[in-house]
Image 1 (cartoon, helix red, strand yellow):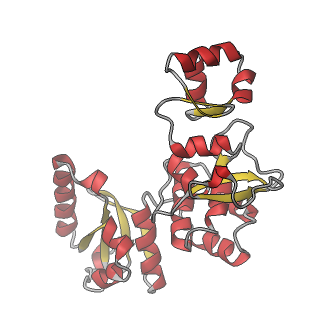
Image 2 (cartoon, rainbow, N blue to C red):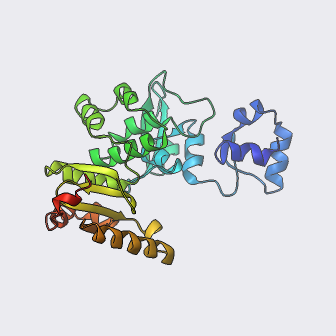
Length: 285
C-alpha cells in the first residue's frame, strides 16, 4: 500500500505509528511529503492535502472524532450546528487548560476504558457518539441521530440501554420515542411535535398508488416533509405532484412542510395538521 492510500484509508490523517503498522517506512513518508502527496500538519502526523481540519485535530490529540463532529463525518443528521470540534480521548488522558492542541475550539469528551472503537478508527462507534451528544445537544437532535442509525442498521434499539454518559431519564425517553422507520431528521422532529400534541402518527405509512408517505396522522391526513436535496429537481416536483393527485383522489388531505420550517418554527406542524380533516373512510394511519 502506498503512503497516500494508507493515509486516505485512515480518514485523511494518520499518526506515524499507525502508518508503520501498515508496513510503510519513514523513508516512504518523507518522500511523500517532499513530493507534495502528503503534508505534515504536526509532528508525527501525516495528512492528505484535502484532509478535514477535524480529522487532523483528532489525530494530533491521539483521539477520535465524536458527538456531532463524528455524526457529520459518518453522514448522520445534525439538526442544529454546534460550535467546535468534538474529540474523544481516553478517560485518563490529561488535557489541561492552555494546551496548544486546544487553540481551536475543541470540545473534549472522555471515553470509557472499554469504549475505544478500534485502534485506528477516526471516529468513535455510533453508540458512543450518540452518548456524547447528550452533553451538547437537546433530546430531539439526539433522537434524530438515533432514528437515522436505527434506520440504517448501524444501531439496535436494545443498544441504547448501554448509554452511560446520557442520563437515565433521557435514555429512557430515547428508547421510548425512537423509531427506525424515520427516514429523515425532519420526519423525526415532526413526529415528536405531533405526538407531544396528542396525535397518533405512523411514519412511512403505505398508501396504494402513492407508495410510502412520510407521516400519516390518524383522523387528519398526510404530512410530507420536503427537504431541499430531494424535492428541488423537476423530476422530484413532478413525482410530488403525482403523489398529491393520488392522495386527493383517495380523499386524503395532505400538507407539505419544508424541513427548515419544521426545524425552526416549533408548533407549525401541529397548526397545519389541525386545519386538515380526512374522510374517515380514507384514513391511512
